[in-house]
Every structure is written in structure tokens, then in C-alpha cells.
Amino acid sequence: MLSRLLFVFFLCCQAPFVLGQTPFFNKGDKVCFVGNSITNNGEFHHNILLYYVTHFPQQPLHFFNCGISGDVINGIFNRLEDDILIHQPTHAVLMIGMNDVNRQLYGANPTTNADTLQMRRAAIDKYKIGLDSLVRVLMSKNMQVILQKPSIYDQTALLKTPNNWGVNDALKECADFIQILSTKYTIQTVDYWTILSQINTDLQAKNPSATIINTDRVHPASAGHLVMAYQFLKSIQRQTAVEIICDKNTLLSQKKSTSCSISNVVNKRYFKSLSVYESALPFPTVEEQKEALNLVALEEEFNRLIFKVTVIKKGIYTLKIDSTIVGRFSNADLKKGINLSQYRHIPQYQQALAVKTTLLERRKAEADLRTIKFVEYGFLKNFQNKSDLQAVSKYLNDLYISKLSHNVYFKNQFDRYVAVKPNEEQLRIKVETLLQQAYALAQPKKRLFVVEKIMPK
Image (spheres, rainbow, N blue to C red):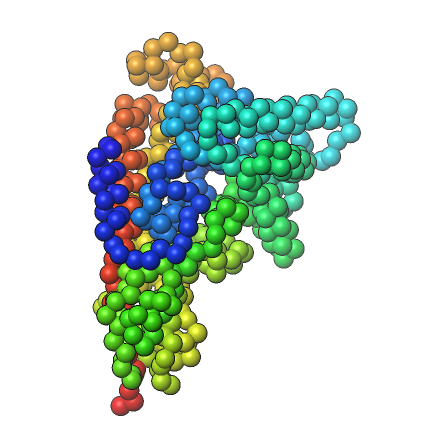
């Protein structure tokens, strides 16, 4: 496995270009995302990984999904050694709280019941003590800790799902405490609670049933996960851009360009061409994420592949990249600059989509690994003979019928566990191999840019 990684690193050193961009995470970093079902789902940190693979393809790193559905701080302590520290992480990115506040203590209406209020307070106090202790333990393991304020519980949308009114206020108290810990230990913090709350407020001012969270009020929808990825990048990562400037000659073009290597500039009256190695690809998105692009400035701040022509005569021009026509643009458009990341048909975007597809396959394999952990930590901790899969299957089926039949989620997880447990090692290899493939697919390619005036017939 090490030899394969070294091969990928060797590939990364082959393309000559000027970086000009500095990633927060460094080459070789191992980043554990630790949390509950929102982390276990993984979409937000898979978006972050996609950003790093497409924008820093020459600096490979590794993200680990260390989320467990339904988890709380005590659960993280119980699996710390063999689910998190086993990866020897350089960074632990922690989000916890949605289950710690004990949502069952909250009903459709506010309460003045003293016992209920006392139990709510006890849950939050326990959370604060536990989180402080967990942060100290993680820091003592020679890793950098990044705290994430919890995503919101949507208690304001008009939805069919029963409402646990007050949960989001409890999460706000958790978020405020995380800010205190951030100051206390001088560690970085990502604030999901505030941005998601503000977006929800704005959405519901127009449509009381709208939500950036799913209809279950707990788990962010795909757009919400992309908002979270944006907020993570905005909190820790400097804005990045590739700027390709076509000037009078190669020397001037290279001097004015950023994060790319320019060669073979041809500068004629109505014809320009240049060869370009870009250090980054566009960040590709899918239909379900479009709402998020209207809510946050991800495209403007973190998805900029700019092409400009500084000296150009008046007229309408065709821009081609390799054999693909990007479009027709005026001389004013070309002088101002075109963000090529907005053009899904260009070769770079198609290359990025191939990276995304590969990482989605990785995410599916990773989800099976997390199912194995979910079942073993939650239901098989004291089961004596886990190697007897037939006995395990019967035990889980009996457990579901006797105690958990109210929620088909558990049956799905149990069935999936029995199906994938025999392939656990192959799944680990697959996750690693697909990450290597994604980095290989993201490597810079030499592109030919051609700008040619459309002459009147």
C-alpha cells in the first residue's frame, strides 16, 4: 500500500506549474471526522475532500469517517482507541451534541415542568464536562483539534414531523460552549449553527415550510451539507483561484497568471493560443446542491478558474479548450475574465466529475465500513462469537423483533452488516484504492486554449 501511495506522490511531482495556493491540510495529513449520524452520513466532509482533491491534487491527504449514528460524547470515548486513534490522525475534526441534549426531553410545546427542566439542564451540563475532557484527551495525543459547532435542529419549519421545541436552543448553548473551549484551548472552530440558522430564517420568511435541514428536522439535506462544507472551508482555508492571463507573450502571461504554468503563447491580431497546466480543477456539483449555491458564495470564493485576455481587438470571439468550444464571448468579456468553473462541458469540469464519481464510490464503501462499526459498537459489544455470522444474524434478528421493530432503520443496518462483514478488509482496501484513483484522475493536464475572432461572412 505504501508503494502505491509513493507512486501517486511521484505522479504528483511531474507537472510543472506555479502553485500559488496554500492548503490548510498538508500532504500526508490524516484527518478524522468524529461525530454522530451527521458525520456518519459524511456528505459534508466528502464535499470537503472533493475540494482538496480537485484543488490540491499534488498534495494527497486522507480523510477518515469516524461518525456513528446516534453517538454521544461517552460513545466517542468508548471507541477512541480502535476507531479513531488507530488511524494515527494529524487532525481530529469533532462535531457532537445533537443526541447529547437528549431530544426526547423536548415536546411540541414549551414546558414549565421542574423535573423535565432539571433533566435538560443535567444533559447539557454533562455534555459540557464531557466535551472539555474529550478535547483535552485528543490534544494530548499530538493532533490538531478542530471543533465544529453543531448543525441545527429545525424547530421552526411547518413540517409533518413532530417537533421537539427547544432542541435548537439547547444546541445553541452547546455552540456557545464550543466557542468558550475554542478560546480556552486556542483551537479552531467552524460555526455551522449560526449560518444554518440564518439561512433557515431567510428561507422560512418566504416559505414557512422551507428548510435547509431534511424533513426529519435533524439531518441536513444535500444543500445543507454543501453549506456546511462551504462554512468549513471559509473558516480554515484561504480562498483559492486559478487565473490564466493571456498577454502579449509567454513571459508576461506567466508573470500575471496564478496557480498555473503557461507556455507557447501565440498572440496575433484576431487569434490567440496558449498551452496551460492548471494546478486545480473546478469543484463539481450536482442538481441537489444547486440551492446551496444560491445561499452561499462558494462559487465566488472557492471555485474560480478565471481566463482573461489582456490585449484584444473589439469583436466576438470563440474560446476553445482542446477540441471543446467553451462559448462565444465579446472582447469585453474576455478582458474582464470568464470563470470557466461555470461551464460544465469543458474538459476540466468533466475531469472533475470523474474525480467526484470515484469519490462517491469510495463514500459507498466507507458507508459499509461505518455500518460494521455501528452494529458492533452498538449491539455486539458483549457478543462472544462474532466470527459465527449465522449466530450473529439470528441474534440481531431476534433483537430487532423484540426491541427495535419500531424503526426499520435498525433492520436495514443489521441486514447490511451480515452482508458486508465478510468483506471488511476488502472494503478497507477499496476505500484506499479509490482515493488513490481520485488523486490520479485529478492530476493536471496540459490544455490548449484558443481564442479566435468570428469574422462576418
